[in-house]
Length: 88
Image (cartoon, rainbow, N blue to C red; front, side, top):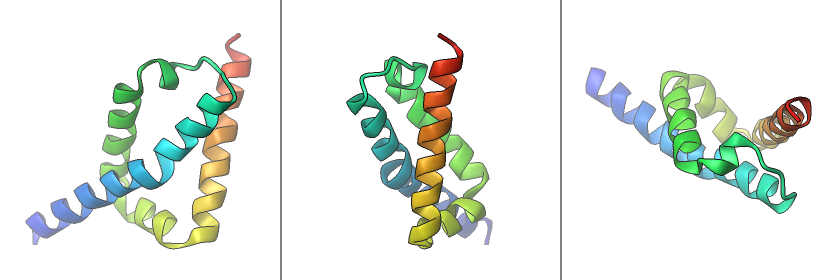
C-alpha cells in the first residue's frame, strides 16, 4: 500500500511540474523578467516537484479540475511576478 502511495505521489509531482510549473515559467520568460526561478530552472523544478510530492493529494485535485488548474497557474504567475517587483 505504501508503495502505491509513493508511486501516486511521484507521478502527481512529475505531472504537476509538466502541466503547471513549466508553463508558468515559460510565461514568465516571455515577459523577460529576471527572477531566481528563471535563473536556475533545474532547482526550481526540483523544489516544485518535492512540494508536489508532499502535497500530492491537493495537487491531484488541481490537476484534475481545469478551472482550478487555470486559477492555480494564474495565481502562481502573479505571485512570482509580485516577488520580482517587490525585490527590485
